[in-house]
Amino acid sequence: RTLGLDRVPEVRTLREKIARLASGGDVLGWQRELSTQWMIADPEEAGYLYVDGHVRVYHGDKANLPRRYVSREKLCLRGTTDYWVNDALGLPFFVG
Image 1 (cartoon, helix red, strand yellow):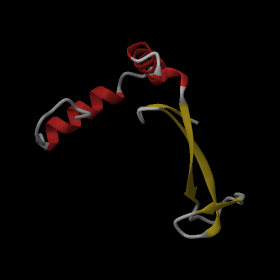
Image 2 (cartoon, one colour; image 1 turned 30 degrees about the vertical axis):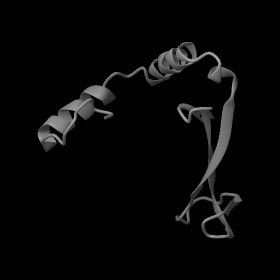
Image 3 (cartoon, helix red, strand yellow; image 1 turned 30 degrees about the horizontal axis):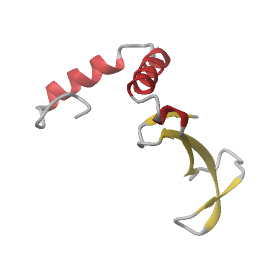
């Protein structure tokens, strides 16, 4: 669906589509435009945003990161937290 195809393409076709998507350069502008379209499409839902934190566990030994609680492990492990902001329908608004 992301690539606009109804079936799995050949690898060459897939690589070309991904290269075209990645070559745009203005990711922040694209994100801003997409968020604006979603807000205009459903203004009643635009007032509700849900914030969800996701912990990425660090498996290396080069950095000394703070410990975060990882619910799937039920432990505090070294890692970082990404915060996802979604609207009431679950559409992603931004990740910080």
